Image 1 (tube, protein in one colour):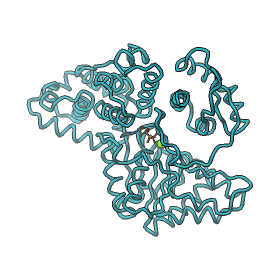
Image 2 (spheres, helix red, strand yellow; image 1 turned 135 degrees about the vertical axis):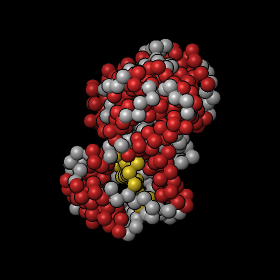
Image 3 (cartoon, protein in one colour; image 1 turned 90 degrees about the horizontal axis):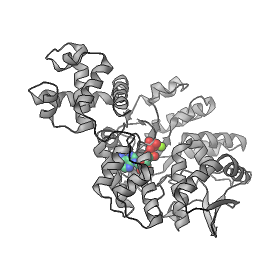
Image 4 (cartoon, rainbow, N blue to C red; image 1 turned 90 degrees about the vertical axis):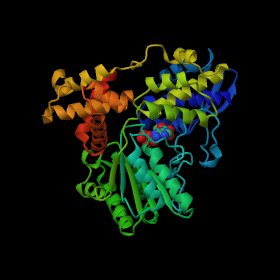
Length: 458
Ligand code: ADP
Ligand code: MG
């Protein structure tokens, strides 16, 4: 058990530091087979993986071993037959990040004829539900749209297109929609797939002359969820296939849900006709969570692991890991694994021991810093920002500063008004609301706000 936890902790870190493609290819199907003295035997799927792990990833693995394992521990890689995956068989009691278990359609020369027919629902991770999804200002719109869809798929927002950076909860949310639909209608054919898998399956289908199975499978879905659509960019044939699937489903009022790291407009080499289809429905973004949301997520994850995190540890982690929830979760897993290995309780001193004392981001930024950095970003004078002037070039920066005082420091509206030399707190309230709303569709504004935040915490 312990070695499994150790390996999961190592995997958690690796997942954060290499590309998703590499992770899936080399690490995803590995597992601890047994322990022989101080050697942990890791099972891998084939000789290529074995070589990669032994050569290319050796230094990385060695340094992670030093971090997590007792001195002298070694890894040995053995080829083993990867068992067919089943969602239920992997009840996780360790601190491994709960990853989705994507559709594992492997095509080999002896692929059974109906390789597609059994795979409904397979791609969904049962733990990705609305219940376990914490709602904050960064994701509330996407959450609301997702909930509406789970209640009446195919009716309201079709397609739903969710975009946002890495590790911000896109997969979790779109899977929650799929799981939600299944709760209401257990017979619904919910198909979840990443666009990479879609491309792979399509190529394999061509190769093994199973195009009609492929087409039939995807077109018979009631709900098609395509994750990380950006990987379809530049793949013309697959895009064409996807376009036809999209049309067939859309015409039949079947729900389509898509995620991507960028809005359709910003995905290069996405065919125009697909792009315009995506604009038929609802496009929502998921942004970076604020401190409060990060804390709530941490507490929630800790509870899932049946662990009690003291408030100062929550604050420490939420302050330290701010860009991305996967990273935040990775840090929590790392801390919990560290504690388990040494029989410790999570505390602030253990946390500083693991992550160091000098945070990547100062614990507290001040109102003054926010106002100054905002003025600087927009190249306006601080004096003007604090003055009653209402020229357009001053008004927006002032609203942004108010927004940031709210989102980053959680100041009350009267306090925000006061910081900007205003008497009336309703102006502050309206400004914050206005920016909050506009951030959802104004990508330039969003970039500006993100940039100011980056500077604040740099
Ligand atoms: P993305 O698909 O955007 O890269 P994921 O959906 O994989 O991100 O999320 C990364 C991790 O963070 C997952 O373990 C997920 O459960 C967790 N997570 C993301 N957003 C939330 C949230 N709002 N509440 C709870 N957990 C979240
Ligand atoms: Mg994802």
